[in-house]
Image (tube, rainbow, N blue to C red; front, side, top):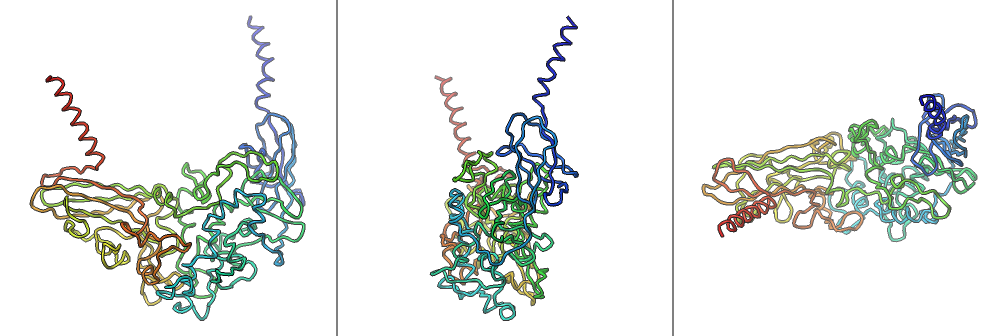
Length: 573
């Protein structure tokens, strides 16, 4: 019997071997035959992927026939080969992308790209990227000609200390990059009636998908600054499109050939979402950081690939698409849905703002005082909150009032001095001017060479204060109110409100719409900004340490009491 079992076990060994067959090989550069370390090898259309060792070798556990493996590495075109499992000695020789940049190349129109990628085009058409060239706020800040009230407040060409020495500034490097690719240091074009391609296309397909390299040592340089961003504008016959899928082997000479560019997941975003001022005007950009988002992310746990929390810009701002196809013209593979991303590239949409942080409100009272503790936890965002250009801000408004009173007209008297900064707006609270009210103002506020602030980031030489909340950090504040000498029911409400700009700038320019023509929440009641979080509590005053209850808690408590009463009544009858 033992003998029979032994031979059966030996006979089954090949079966188990088949289930764990290996495909192994090497990835090399085709021009030098040099092994490429850190290259990706991906099963075409699948989720199986490995990284080559220091000697360029790889090994994958695969079974089947006609397995198409695709090799990918930054600076090279993709290359594929077909093999059967098991296999050894598989060679993936990657052709290098030519390092030349052809200034005579004409960037493709988004509609050209959309002929094969209609889903991505339709996504992009609804994105802020597509509308970047038409941003009226940018035109108002630069030359005061974006809206009817644009001459109010700060106008760069009139008011900046650099208006004469650097009249064009660098606005167009992000908002109209096509003009900068062709002619660096050009000014923003405010002609939106008969727009040029640079205005009309904003941040278009060919702008992003032609970036061969981002020099991270120059990450604070503005936009697509020469030398900080390297483009691959091809000569005829060497067309290249960069991306991050890892398994694209499509090659149509002169029209489409793909190359792997992992920097498109974060560093490419940094070209316009990370920059600093240049007070010395020597193109070193070592001044006050104006767009801080990339470095905020880089300093967080989200930027650590070994962390369970790892997420890059694409992970959050380009959600998985509802379609796992990337091309409508050829028989492209059905890729894992998570690898195909939506091209709407969203940021401060209601969904993002309302899922950025968590807010906790705790209320307690004694005979004479009501104490409110508010904690804001930035546990859902991969950078500071708020982030972006320095006019972005956030307001925590804490209100306490007796039942039947108006919280803006007859609130409880605040005893401590934790109040909203003047940048929350000085004026009538009923019109959204919240300065001096209980709460807290969050922003990064710069000053100029004379110490005056806030100043626009172009003229900033220092920071007055920066109390924004970093990723995975929290902020707590306490508010104490005097209770009247009678018992009553008191309400406490905390609202966290996002504003796109300081209120004094909005007023100076008369803005009622954002830069893309959408209604501006900053001037709309009741919150005068976008409501990110809200918490309310109700408390009975005049008894020591009575806990506060939310409306939901009171409702549940009422139902519970009714049920107990009903049971008692049934037992009595």
